[in-house]
Image (cartoon, rainbow, N blue to C red; front, side, top):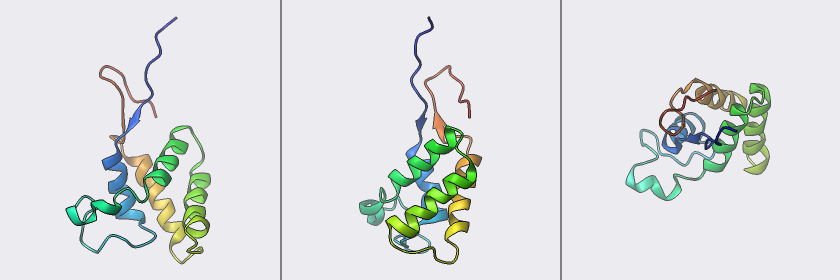
Length: 115
């Protein structure tokens, strides 16, 4: 029996780059600033759990529409913001950016990342 290989790991900084540049439903990040600027580090992890869950769903083959609905639900219901104009488009943009990033997942040396 072949040895078990560790699962791929997500590059949190890349996921945050996506989330903060495309999503930010609460509007925490001041325009023109980056999530990793010293003044913003106190809330840099605000969306991590949602984005990690979305990325994991996509990796497991969950349909784009379903993951988009998940992010819309987070914004509309969990954050109690309602489904505002642009909500679905932001969620879809996050899903597209996650799917398009070939460096989002890492594996131990010598293993290929299968998407």
